[in-house]
Length: 330
Image 1 (cartoon, rainbow, N blue to C red):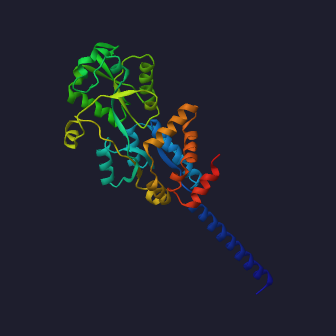
Image 2 (cartoon, rainbow, N blue to C red; image 1 turned 135 degrees about the vertical axis):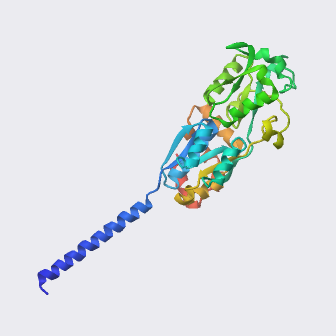
Image 3 (cartoon, helix red, strand yellow; image 1 turned 30 degrees about the vertical axis):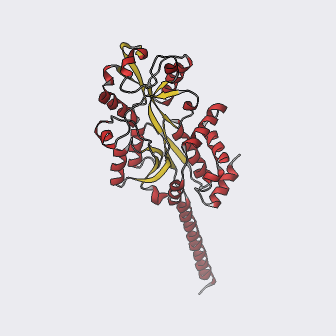
């Protein structure tokens, strides 16, 4: 064999070897690339706070990029079931029971368990209306219609006004049926506030002016720590009654983390993390109060939470991930 031919074979071998190495490198890189994880940016504070906590851990601990899709309860859960969204940090299970059950049965979503369980929702009036003698101490759905004229609807003074939530929230539709069940629709118009900010603004505007207000609200929120409100009593929760016409009080709703089924294969370590993720309403109220009192955003509140509750969140992740997260904190 000539030296020239031998050299040619060696060059061919080197070329093929380099190609194989480059091919392997490219393949390994593609395998190691992590997908962007999309979270449901629900339109209320506690959900956005949880998203910020999860974002910080996912990005700094696990190396994932994250994104959010804003919207209401119903469309965002539909997006979760369709695979357009990977993670929903706050599914209020009783409010969305039918949709959740159907999506689980269809193999579209997986319920990872409780985020927090000490939530509350219902109807409120300012306590000063009772202290001033305008309303009785035992205000309830049985007698509030007698005082409708205190809550006159400025657009229709023949009825009172009830402030409801966003039309995309499941509870908003439930409240409409509740009003029909209790016969309150004969005495009150339901005013759809259009989101957390609008509902907060209506409540705070009335409260600061010492004026009447009647509407839906929930906890955990920072606002209920700033105002003194009284619950408009309803019959105790009864599952059979609830299933028939919602004619009873909301139960304390377990709030769960639900993910799209594909996340189980796409990011199994994230599923493990979110399965362990659990908080309390007290923790959330504290973080939201910090945010409000200091005029900071959800990301800053998440950092405060990670600093303040290190012994809690470090139980959610392995030690190496926890160390990365702690190293990223200011």
